[in-house]
Length: 420
Image (cartoon, rainbow, N blue to C red; front, side):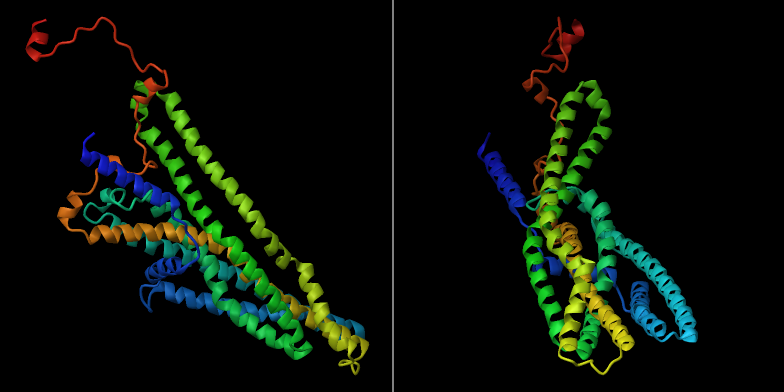
C-alpha cells in the first residue's frame, strides 16, 4: 500500500469517526435546518399552503370557542337542576347537543384540512429535493466525498414523509395554544386570583425543564434509529438486486449474517430509545393525568371559598360556579399538557429534520464545487460502511468454500491455450 492510499484510508477513518460521534439535539442547527424547510413549505404568501394554514387557524379558533361553550354545559345543568327549571333544562339540552355536534364537525374539518396540508407539504419538499438531487450527477456524488450521507433514498422518502406528518401535528398547536393559555389564565385569575394560575405555570415550567433535560439525548437516538432502519432496508434491497450473484456463489449464509448484524444494530438502538422514552414519559404522564387538573381546580377555588369571598352565593349558584372554575382551570392545565406532549414529537421531528437538512447541505456543497474538484473526489468504494458492497472472498476467511476447481489447465497466453 503506497503513501497515497494510506493517506486516503486515514482520511476515511477520520470522516467515519466524525460521523459516528456527531450528536444531534434541539439547538440552533436544528432551528436553521427546519427554517430552510419551512420556506420550502410556504413558497409564497398566495400559495395554497398559506390558504390552508389560514383555514386551519380559523377552524382551530372556532373549535376553542365551541369547546368553551361545551365546558360550561355541566355548570348550566347544575343551575337548572338546582332550581327545578323545566324550560331551562330542555333549552340547555338543545344547546348542549348543538355545541357537541358543532365541535365534532369542526374537529373532522380540521383533521381533513391538516391531512391535505401534510400531503401538499410532502409534495413541495419531495419535488424540491428531487430537483436538486437529480441535477447533473448529484445523485452519484451525494454518497461520496468528505461529508458522508447514509441512505439518501430513505431521507428522500420515509424521512420526508415523517417530517411533514409530525410538523402538521405540531404546527397548529404551537401557534394556537399560547393564545388559549393567555385567555384561560386571565379567566382563572379573575375568578380565583392569580395564585392558582401561577401555581399551574410553575408546575409547567418545572415539567418543561425536566423534559428538555431528558429529551436532549433522545433526539440523537431518533436520528440513529432512522439511520439503522435505512441500513437494514438497504441490505435487503442489495440482496434483492444481487440475488443471482449471491445464489451463484452460494453466499446465502454470509448475507444472512450481515442482515442479522444490521438487525441487531437496529434493535439495540430501538431498545436504547425505549429506555430513554420511559424516563421522558414519566413526567409527561404525571402532568397529563386528568385527576391532577381536577385536584388543582379544587385547590385554586378552596382559598377564596375558605376566606368567605363567595359567601353571598346560594348553594346552587356556588355549585355552578365551582363547576365553571373546574373547567377553566382544568382546560388551562390541559393547554399546558398539549405543549408538554409536543416534546416527544419534537424530539422525533428534530431527528428527521437533521437528516433531511444534512442531505440539502450536501447537495448544496456539491453544487458549489468546480468540475475539477468533483473529479478529485474519492471513488464510490470509499463510502461509509453503511453502503456495503458484498465481498465474497470473505467466505474463504470464514472457512466456507464458494467453488472448487479440479484438474484445470492454466495457460499464460492466448495462443498456447488456443493450440491446446
